[in-house]
Length: 117
Image 1 (tube, one colour):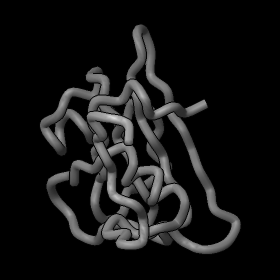
Image 2: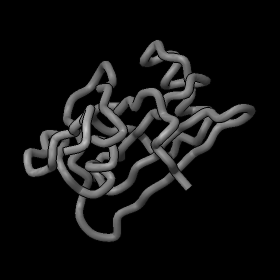
Image 3: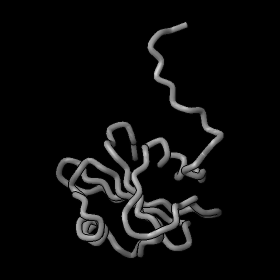
Image 4: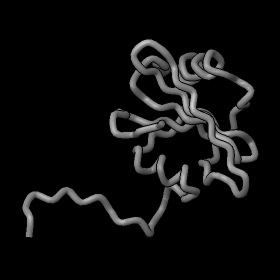
């Protein structure tokens, strides 16, 4: 199960990615294409052209996890573009996985309370 509590950073590969790539191909894309370390404690998220499928690459201890999500209906609100990946919070990733936009304006903002009322 994918838990986002211990994730340091989330990178979205803007635009579309050929999801026929498996772990090695996606790790090479992260390292060579983005200049990032695929062995870090970051999530790397990729989306297909139709925006109906996602793959998430994650290194944990001694091996990679490859998460795959396919929507039966609808599309992900994926950022358009190419080139450098976009950094998002784990909360924004949850929005994307739930079908919401990254610029979600209806969500409650995060509150860091210091005292109880």
